[in-house]
Amino acid sequence: MKNKENKFENYIEGRNAVTESLRSGKPIDRIYILDGCQDGPVQSIKRDARKKDIEIKYVEKSRLDNMSETGHHQGVIAVTAAYEYASVDDILKRAEEKGEKPFIIVLDGIEDPYNLGAIIRTANLAGAHGVIIREDRAAHLSAGVARASAGAINYTPVAKVSNISRTIEDLKNKGIWFYCADMDGVSIYDTDMTGAVGIVIGNEGSGVSRLVREKCDHVISLPVKGEIESLNASVAAGIIAYEVVRARR
Image 1 (cartoon, one colour):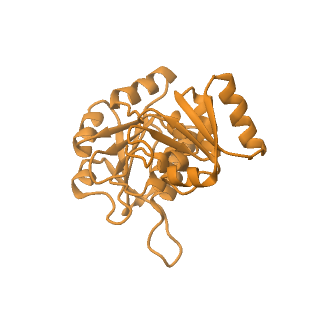
Image 2 (cartoon, one colour):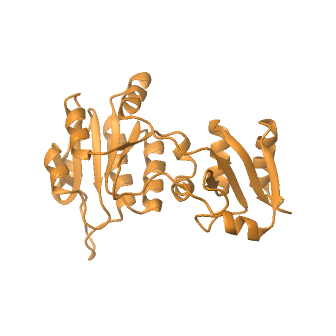
């Protein structure tokens, strides 16, 4: 990822994202902190960084503003190595190690980094074993995604694949049932999602592509009572993910 200061560095921005990166054990080279900032969250970040012998640099706001990719650094930016992607097998292994039926969220062309980060955050909280994203025409792991995930990017595996349809077909052969979110589907409340589950969320504008939809076992929808047509992609993903949580209780 190319940054303004150093094209070989990746930045984690914002207090929650940096705090969770420190807690997760993610390798951090150094942390830039707004000079003079003494509030509680920043003091905690400094303590954790010192325990791990991570270099701290105190800089002016203009320096942080110049480094920031999100525009919302909150006075803290950590410098790390490149964001690492998991493999689909890593996600399945995570489920196996936990003794749980696989629960995967598949994103067919999510383009907004905020939506991707928010979905990774939801995936973590809902106990999903991983997120699969598309290699082309989609948001990828970045500082903005890390910040929107509130640090969940450090815990929830994200796999990047070249062909979503083929990946779904491969996973179906391993016993996972796929549920595609679409306005024309059967109500989620009439759907059994107690087994091995893959939730498929489509692009913010065009939804799930035809080829991907055809690979899914079921098409599901959320009841809509208002005047507008659809929910934000990350909100829809959250509601569906927690229906999986409810079904598995």
